[in-house]
Amino acid sequence: MPTSPENAVEVRISRKKPAFSVSPRFHLYLKDYEREQDFRLRYEDLLSWSEAVALEDHHGGDSLWEMLIYPPPVREELEDNLKRLYCLLKMAGDMSAVRHLFVERIDFCHFANSQPFRIKVVNQYNDNHDYFYIKKADASRVAGLELEHLLSPNNINFLVQGSTLVEEHIVGLPGDVFLQDYFQRPGINRARIAKEFVKFNERCFVRLLGDMRSYNYVMDVTMDFDEEQYRVRATDFDQQSYEGDIRVYLPQFHKENKPIVDVVWEILTLDTIRQYQIEERSLMARRAKGDWGRINDLLDVMEHGEFSNPEKTAQLAAGLAHFHKNDDFRACRSMGELVRLNLEVTLELKENL
Image (cartoon, rainbow, N blue to C red; front, side):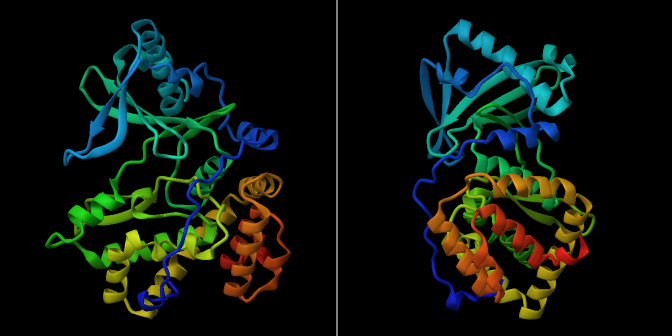
């Protein structure tokens, strides 16, 4: 976190990011690494609902989600296909669980760029439930998911077929809810939270994942024998290397994260912050070196695909050149090239590959 709160300036993010189609080259990559699967259901099949009922959050406010009601024949066919799709996503195509699963609810959110459907699947034997999502396959989001899987501590399970994207649910407490309802509770380990936020900030910047405002990530809390452990997990990947402002890729600059940023500067020294940054870069470098063939293939797709526009690409190239004091960034002509060079420079990869 190179900038203290006194010098921080609020960043602006494009009101509506355009969707970029998954190119044929990208589809080949996804097929090679078993992300492309053949399934019957398409995003458009879920659009034929007859009624929608607004869902409230735990405080009685608007959750921005609607529960959908379908005509009985449509619902029956959807449920069968959704259960099979869940088994394909979670059980590698083993359909033995289909007979004891049922779809309790199908929800829809108009607010998000990806216009997602959220599917609630329940096990009849024990009432355990799970969620998964069906979205429009935006190239930015798919690339962001794949980079998260390859470079972060978190594995991500998703599938693509044509223009349809299927994602597993990422478990955790939404960041905005955590900051509002839990962050000020007595006994919470703010030092550990501050450490994790520094590491999350670093992960986002190194792989150029933008717009990590508090409602675009979750806080995953794990009980330990000593005290709770915390991990910040991104849930929204639409802004993978799209914006031109370098600050968009540093969660510390988003005003929604100010409560946790203030605690970072209150509790941690600059030397400690740098230590955590180095720790996180070292871990990312190990992951990158261990799977560089696949990462290289993904970056090749990104270099030849559309993920932003020339103006934003040039702006980010200039910002990274200034930040790293490295004019090689100015020669980059695509967001994919910038992601590659930023990985090579920050993780010191080039001389080791």
